[in-house]
Length: 143
Image 1 (tube, rainbow, N blue to C red):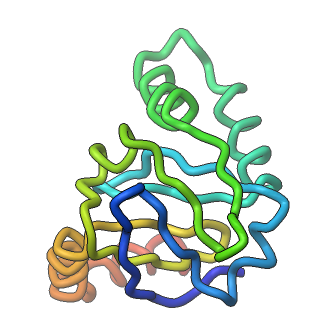
Image 2 (cartoon, rainbow, N blue to C red):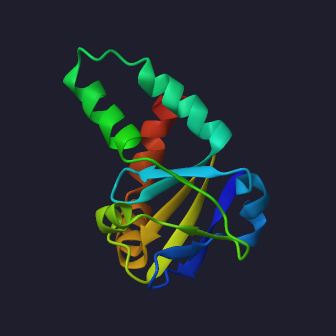
Image 3 (cartoon, rainbow, N blue to C red):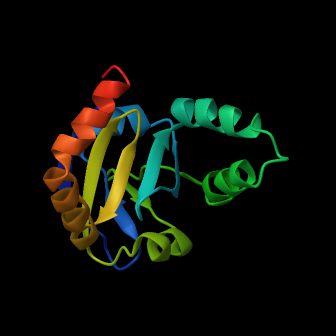
């Protein structure tokens, strides 16, 4: 399981070091894609197959499902850890998420999220401020 928040730097070649504690789970390969809220999602191959299967079974007759499948599937790229535990993020994904130098990697159980540090801090600040309302809505869902 992926949990925690980690500060890393993106180098000039688009390489990002993955936290050491997650590297074993990603050594067989991974998939990075456009995420939601302006970040990237990084999945193990096993988790990606589960998600991709669900997306491929969505009804293509609905514009929202087509759009979401395009966002996730067409934006996806296979990545491999190098000997230093880094992945190369494609240019189009770095642009999508506004990734330049300072990066936050967040563990969200079955995926990692890759954020521009400034965007993450803004998002986190707003979410922390709204945590009471969020908790109330989740309570309605049985969480």
